[in-house]
Length: 264
Image (cartoon, rainbow, N blue to C red; front, side):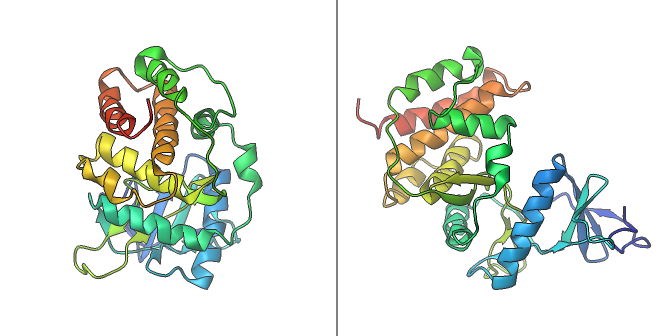
């Protein structure tokens, strides 16, 4: 695999400050991928964005193998970008909005419609497009209660990254450096929804202060965006085999805060 990406003689060094397993090899970062189709699409999309540039963001430029493939034997490569994941939640939301100004020019990929994985099912359930079985003990009951307060989102959809929490990098050696994005997890939803997902994740698992909700309340249809994002994460949690009643507590905390913004 290292031969395919041109770093055969490099000694791999772990990059524990990146999300998920990753190894540094002579200026490249090699990462195993669970979904080769998704990883190949993401690499192509990031290549397209990087060619035009994204204002205020750094992108981890993908590296193709010697035969032109973007994924080899379950591994993908990119040029290294300095940084690590930090709990700078508001900066991640701002990065989301900047990223999605750029992804607005990308076409809807077939992948969005063809996917039937856990995230795709949760997304469709959150928007009332599909009924799926949800474990009542790990989020299904709360999902059903909140879904009754759901209203249609009158906002245009576009390609967005729906899983930015815990994946945006900040360079501690250069505080002024733009944040870095490694890849794309595609959804076809409003940009405000993608920002709301970051808020829900930050409240549930990142220790964010409750004020993060009001700091972004200028975004259009914000209470409903938060509700749809919360429903999405509840649907993910209630499907996931490793989630427990205890791990639901963070989402219950987020639900109390979001619920206070919604009409009774």
